[in-house]
Amino acid sequence: GENVEQHPSTLSVQEGDSAVIKCTYSDSASNYFPWYKQELGKGPQLIIDIRSNVGEKKDQRIAVTLNKTAKHFSLHITETQPEDSAVYFCAASTSGTYKYIFGTGTRLKVLA
Amino acid sequence: DTAVSQTPKYLVTQMGNDKSIKCEQNLGHDTMYWYKQDSKKFLKIMFSYNNKELIINETVPNRFSPKSPDKAHLNLHINSLELGDSAVYFCASSLGTSPFGANVLTFGAGSRLTVL
Image (cartoon, rainbow over all chains, first blue to last red):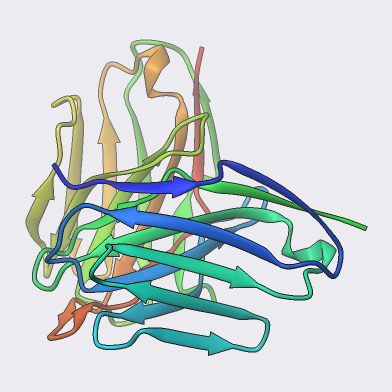
């Protein structure tokens, strides 16, 4: 079946450094790739997404890149801050399926 | 105003009991979901309804029964609760799909179920 692999499972960075989280998807028909941030005790919240007709998207300190050929997509956070500490999930979805396949999550710790 | 609200936030109950979790969205979305998040934080789809019609039903024990009285509400009823049902259950909604893929999934804050 379809799956999404996400690495690393945990990531610790110093405040101000960059963080990169990578995901690989298996279903070549996937065409929508959101990233969610889940803070302690809360539901996942969308932080950025990318569709298959775009290779890169940026929103202030966060960016996402997509390589459709390799079926990889990545989240880049620059100038990390303590409030970036959370669990991050990638996901892949396909038109018409209503199904989002989530990665296994990355726990990011930004050390002050 | 909360976009996707679910109640209760916490639920502690004994094995064998029956319990329900309710979800409501005020976003005007057509599609609603139930996800289960286990202790390792894995997010797994359980059910999805589009305009009150069941469209996704993953391999979930038939002790779990979703009900959608209208497209703004999706409730989850669980019979004969087992220890393994302990998890955080998230309700979510989306506008449906577009030609370029699914639309944004908006989650509720979660309902933590503990079965003793």
